[in-house]
Figure (cartoon, rainbow, N blue to C red):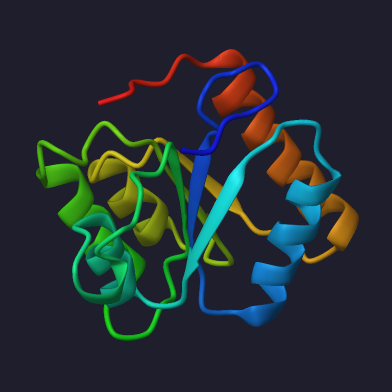
Length: 149
């Protein structure tokens, strides 16, 4: 187990993102933050589902505390992944933050209808992107109380 300085288990974020630049930005933003988190990264929707169900190369994966989910993914899009997460009793309590470039009303409406916990447009500027990641991290790990199930 990974433990933070206060002895509690270190929060885990599963980043579902296919863009290497956005992965790097997220990693950098988390490094600059004050919360000690573990980041797991998968690069397509099928890997996300395999990770969450601990299948194949993800057999030893640990349950994430939070999922950052892009919508525009190869193999299985983010809406399909979100749907699978939110209909499964063992996964649906994990907060899913949609972090995407799509500001299309149908994507926003579909994500919320499938019980996304939040929908955030990705800023293109690194400082703005880092600020968003820090705000998400601060709210979900320092303000909100998450389930351990």
